[in-house]
Structures are given as structure tokens and as C-alpha cells.
Image (tube, rainbow, N blue to C red; front, side, top):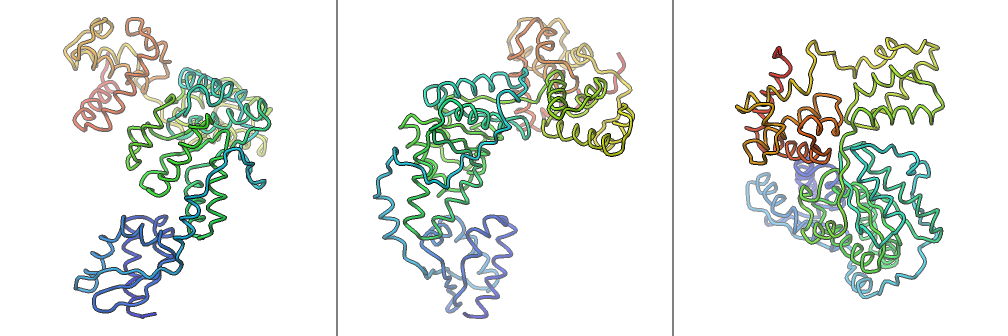
Length: 453
């Protein structure tokens, strides 16, 4: 190989790592080998045609710009394909997929037997998602197909996927079920394509298209991965057309899945979409009590309530800190007191505010900032003049206090808890997209925390 070409290519790879990240570089760039740099043309050896096609579509312009800067001249890319796999691709594409053929014996369902419906704590934040998951488990492929569950990290999406899987395994022992993360799906797809083996590619297709139920987690990982999206699109269509169940989990709603083709997004919306919110105080207390019961460890109520008030957004963090505390108590033989718990959790304990924040205080300050009265916030008026301040007040009551959505709804003229959840979602989206609105809300928050009423 040309040493100059090698040196130049190493600099290109370093530049690309900064712009597109290690994962893409390891997958698509590092398998390429520089052969020569002559007459302003860099020739790369590529394992097969998929690599040259991906580079041409996604990074050729960037690479040629980097090369031209390094060489102080316009440099173009050319490719030398090591292995011609077009006959393999043609064979695989023309090979029919038999949906009644058995799955390979090595395929495991990857369902965690511990994550069942019995161990899932239901509260206002996840009741609808839980109900839809149970409906799918009772009638797979017929209702809510696909079921699309979204929510933040550690709120129980993965638990529900496994819970459906465990229920199906009990009811339908012969069902072909698979739980897979989207990251694993993409890696598996790429590895099989890179192998150039028609048998491996065909086995991959059969593995996924012969399922009775596919659970795919973290679908947002599909963003920007065009070839993998194409394959998943085909798998989705095969399963859906065959009346097979698909359950998808995501950390964001469909309209936030940038760089995923619209035809896939539209299919995600075919069934039912449900979200999981952050758990309210009552649900967090119930989760901690259930975890303590499962671990067969007595935890005083004041300790459970204290932990629940400190950790509000993540169930994994909630349970993890409970285990951290119980382990400390066991191994140090320390009395189980609230002071001991505060010592263990000193890195997560939020200092107590001197000023008590109440829903009445939030209502009063929000009303004053919008030239309204508390009565206006509680009224049935739906024009923007009243609706937006009311939604802001509901959102702040939800995020700044431990009051449940049901109680918040009652405090705003007897509104339903789903109205509160809708208001919170709307304000959260507006905060993320409108900096001026965010500044207004931050000003109100500051007043709530400092103003004496």
C-alpha cells in the first residue's frame, strides 16, 4: 500500500471520528483500506459494494472535502471492491420467506422471566400504558398492533415489553417470541451483510420474519441508519401482514424520531401509541415498598417516603438507591434511621427549601404574571388567554410539588387527571422549543421560590 495514502487516510479517519462518532467510524470507515493516492485520486479497498454505496450516499462529500484540505488540491474517491456479492444479494432478494418455517434452534427469546405484570407497579403515570400492554398480551396481533410505548429513561417501558412476553409464553407456549434492542438488531444486520454469505443473510431474514411477536426496544437507535431502516420496514410489513404482534419502545414520541423515514413513522402510528410519565409520589412510594418486599427487607415508612421525595424522575434510580441503602445497613450493621439514610444519600439529597411551595402559591403567582385571578385559572374558559396560564400552573404544580395529577385537577375546577397530563406535556414541549417562553416560566419559578405570600 501507498504510505502517503495511509498517512492521509489516518488523518481523514481522525476527522470523521470527531464529526460522526466512533460507532459509525468503526462500522463503516475502519474496514476501508487506502491503496493509493495518485493524480488527485484516493483509491480505497472496500470489503463489498455495501460499503461503497454507504460512503457515496452519506460521507463521500465530507471525505473529499477533508482530503482536498489536507492535500491542498481537489481530491476524489475511487473504490476497489474486494468481494462481489451482487449474485448473493440477488439470490437472497429472490428467495421467498416462508413464514411457517421453524426458527433456528439457537434463537432465544431474550425475555427476562423476572419482569412480569405482577411486579409492575401501576399508578396514574403508567396506567394507560399498562392496560394496553395487558390487552396486547391477551389478544396478540388483533388489537393495538403495533403497540408503541414511549417515555423517559427508567420509567418502565422495557418492563412492559418483557411482561407482555412472559404472559404470551404462558398462554401460547409455541409462540415464536423475540425481544431485541434496536442497537443489537442494527449490529446483527450489518454483520450479516458484511459477511457476504447468502446463508447468513437468509437466516437473518427468516429469524425476524418468522416471529409471532417482536419486541424491539430503543427504536430511536434506528435514526440515520438507512439500510437498517429498509430491512426493518420489510420485516415490519411481513409481520403485520401476517397478523403477528409488534411492540416498540422509544425514549421519544414518533414526531421526534428525526432521520427515520416517514413511511416507517406512519406504520408506527397504525396501532396504538401510549406514553409513560414520571411517577407521582404515591406511585414512587408503592414502587419502593414493593421492591423492599421483593428483597425481603423491612424499610421504615419514613425512610421510604424520604427516598420517594428525593428521587422523582427515574424508577431505576429509585430502586437502585433503595438497594444501596439496604446494603449499607446490612453490611455495616447500622441502625435503620432516617439520619443514616441521609448520610448514605448525601450525594442525591436535595437541600430542603425554607419556603414551602403550595399549589395555591403557584396559582397566585401565575395568575398575577398574566393579569388574571385564581378564579380565572379554575374557570371553564378555554381561550388562549386563560388556557395557557392554567397549563403553566398545572405544569409547575406537577414539577414543583409532590401533589398527584388527580389532586391538581381537583384544584383547577375539578378537571380530570388526563387534562393535567396533557397540559404538562404541552408545556414541556413548548419549553424545549421556545426560549422566550422558557425564560417566562423560569421567571415564574424564581418568584414562587422567593416570594413571600
